[in-house]
Image (cartoon, rainbow, N blue to C red; front, side):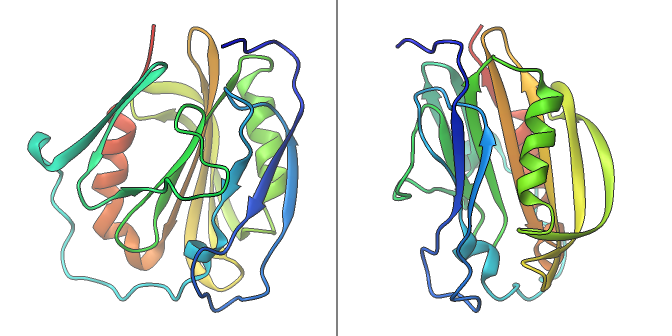
Length: 210
């Protein structure tokens, strides 16, 4: 597979996969970048716009090794909790360069592997320009330097997702030997205490090939 060096327009689109309270929410967004195999990055508005889940009592236990699924692909390996699902039905799903994991409720992690053609900070800045005030009305933000064991740059936006539900979106990018990896991690406040250990588990168990 030839990755090349040129960056082209990477489209980020909101796609409703399920009935949602915001039935008219559909936006086409663009930042500069190119996924590993030229896929279009998708942010799922159906899951973002669902009614926020009711709070559950107690924090979810950290997944045991035998309570996790494993993905092994050419450029990376990943483990994630059994209750989570990989959205293989998304129109622009690319198992090698652009895919999303969903919790049993609303939280999600999108992983986009792209050509190493720009510095991670620029990748993050471009992504945030298309997320802030569209996917989330940001009330506060903080800088990120780590996602799991990966050092990079990012921001944690907290506010109201689709201008309605309290939550946050982490946008983070790090460089591997050959690629940039963009992470978009979305969680609702009512869901966070039940999935924060899952999110940590996913970030701790994502490894790029050497």
